[in-house]
Image (cartoon, rainbow, N blue to C red; front, top):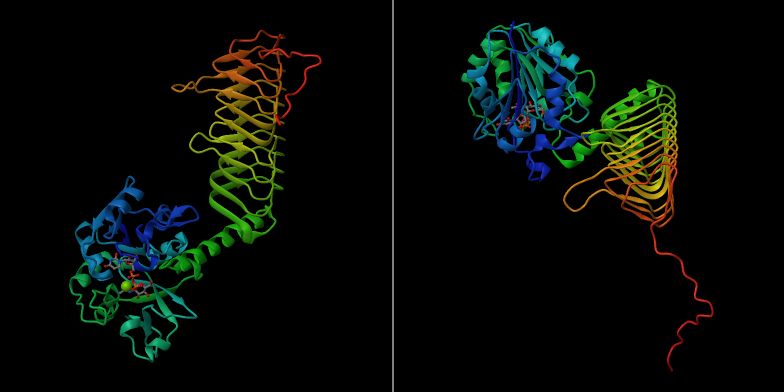
Length: 459
Ligand code: UD1
Ligand code: MG
């Protein structure tokens, strides 16, 4: 039986007070709409349709992917009007699942339960018991058998109906054929002058079709975002949920309230994370990895036993960054895309590494830059030394052999190769290759003027 998934995302989101369409605002680093799409990915669907309207071009560009279709709703005359626009593209006579682009945390299992209960012939509503149901459509049930009779929108509800705490989440599964017929019969004779999708409930009841209300497992999966306050509240709720999952899997978080994961975190055993760390994209932490306070780590793999000290920034961007087993990084280190550090590498404070490979045991402990470099084992790279990798037009590589010692404040002008075991005197500007084992010094010679007197101030 064909399944259609329809996500309503045409609304304006006025209360966000933002130039960005509401569904593109981010929760845990990903747009609200992208969360919804991701959560229905595992559902085998004949069609996935996003209804766009306000900021349509921006919304469509942001989430376009194979297998996702867009239908525009202009102007936006209500949720029923939105579904009227997709009628021509709905496939088959099976089930249509309707979700909201601004309710990001719907569980895949809940969506599946709605689809299964619908089975192409019942109308199934996802409902939720709310402490404060203000603004929600109320579920009107038959006092005798508890069956659902209708949904009445908050603005149209009587004072008695407003006392009902069971609200409509905005998500439903409907028989596709009947849905097409029902939305064609909607009117806008109501308090908001809108075409309400929720009016189809009374139509289904009148036709004698089964109407079921399934209660959401948790409030968080039906919470919508209307303003920046709700966005921040949902962000914290989601972060707390992620933190709890990680802690139950053995990760030790110093404070789950000061932890942010904006992507996925794969971890080994005995991982410890201090306060105020942010993980973005795809991050892997091996066994026994410890992350100090205030680190930001994005798209990186940290191998077992490595220690990332406080205030370190690692951003692998698209290329990724990797830290070897037992390496010591930071505090205040910066690893950029293509930084590939071997086992037991030490990167200290104010050291920046970009697109460079450092072999086992190499050390750059203070105030240095390694860009586009290949660094051998046990290299000691002195404080203040840099690779001058950019000639103003092109980037060039620096190759440093095993056991090279680079003194402090050296400039290695690329392309250049330092043979294994070479030593570079402090303060040198190296523009020519250095043979293995040689000492290279390239700086002004020290002179001593005996008996020289300093100038005195004129009176
Ligand atoms: C809707 C429900 C209400 C439910 C509530 C849950 C209706 C009539 N009411 O009310 O019963 O309790 O959701 O949050 O359905 N949208 C469009 N085009 C439109 C109007 C809305 O695509 O013309 C989209 C919005 O972008 C949003 C969703 O539909 O994603 C819901 O719209 P919204 O205006 O928030 O509905 P509510 O008034 O909250
Ligand atoms: Mg509305």
